[in-house]
Image 1 (tube, rainbow, N blue to C red):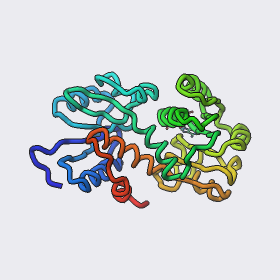
Image 2: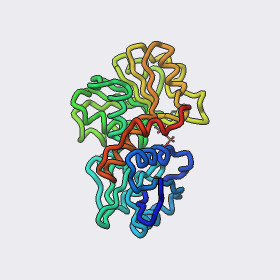
Image 3: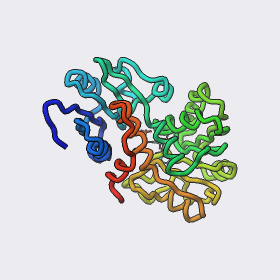
Image 4: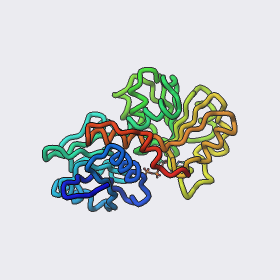
Length: 285
Ligand code: ATR
């Protein structure tokens, strides 16, 4: 990669950001395509989000990814956002074009494409259980809800009121029936019996709490489930091991990251990048 005075800049902003895999995989795509771009990470604290976006305008930074916890906070500083980002309430991609900052949400594309390509679910099953009701769950529930084959989405959350409000907020955008439940053993046993896919969007099991699982001892899991964990740090979570132990298919979330990044890259450059190159740039463990 040769950086010159005409090299255009791409970046990710987050807090923290130093563990982000995006620079590795995005620069791998840049190199593979021989483009004059460079992708870096900026640690931006919550009080500096507006300043960071003004900096993006001033320095003519071409594109940004936005990660936790800024995906909602950037919205007031943008000139325009896509319908999808508006409905999810989160922007993870900003395109700076003709002096305007336009926000998109490629997490929705990331989860749907990973369910198809990584988990082999095409079409999706009729009944899907989602654990969690925070920002990540919003994108997942919205994405599932756009698919005609999905008939029921069961949302489980430790704080059940949040699951209820997520179901209420997403219901205008889907024909699927959205149901909300407390994240409790008895509820899970009953709900998972009629589900074919379980998606964990909670942070339970993420480093350093690697010995925890959002489904407790896993008694509610069964062999006919596909279990998708959006947690990818560690690559294999306790939930995935529990799924495999009962004969279910367990799938980690790292490729969701790749596909959301590929879509962002396409928004910035007009080129859909080689995803195999991006996957190969990620750590193996
Ligand atoms: P955020 O700031 O985005 O809410 P978080 O605190 O890590 O991030 O929580 C993300 C999701 O994981 C939420 O659905 C949260 O449940 P609550 O809404 O009840 O807080 C869920 N979560 C986090 N820790 C959990 C735990 N120990 N058990 C069950 N759910 C948990």
